[in-house]
Image (cartoon, rainbow, N blue to C red; front, side, top):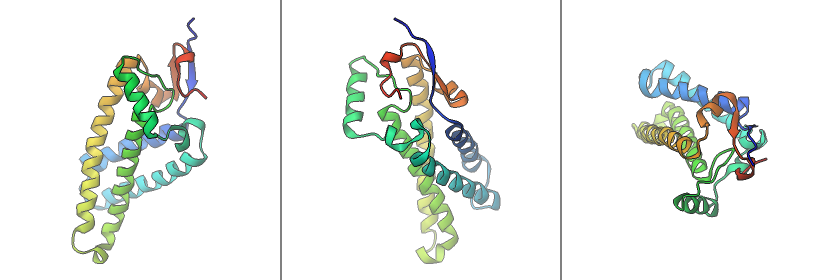
Length: 184
């Protein structure tokens, strides 16, 4: 029996964090000159957004909470095994492998923001140490973003999902709610 419905997944805080961070990262990675005033202002804004996201990950809505989607080794392995066996599990929120990507993206963002701020205090760390670490985080972030975008496209295709639409509207369309692994 088919029960088509929409599930509220990503609240306005998550969607704004996502799209504003996407925009600001694009500016800092591809448009603004490294180390210049506007690059720094964008970095400080991202740092502020990360603080909001971390608080929201503890106190926010169901699918925003880290505890709801935190990937354990057993969840990740079960997900991979099911997928390899042709039974792609459907999640309203993040699937376990997607959760790993979110952790990587957040780690890279925090690392980039913190090391960017610390470049102001280079005298404590030695010449160009923080700039080097900052660059590693930024380059890793770029690679993670590329993988993330490609994975969203593939997962949308495999699950006939609507991840991109959901990140705009906050709601996911579900054909059969009985197959949703993390339904609230």
